[in-house]
Image (cartoon, helix red, strand yellow):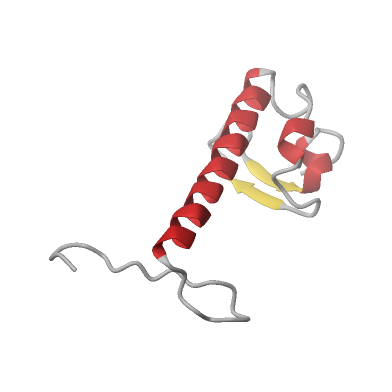
Length: 94
């Protein structure tokens, strides 16, 4: 390993505990990146369409558990604590 380079230490699910080989780690990283890019694109569309109470949450819903809790800083335009999909849809209290 070259100096200054971090060792790749990505683990597979605990059932096996075996380290992933480099190809598996790259595949997992690319899959994670793809999910995050999709979520950020859906979020950008949601905010551009008016956000909570205005825009459809449907494009974002697939990225979050129905019982998700999101904590946004109060200084943010949509600050507060949001509980579940319904809160993000603007159809229930935060």
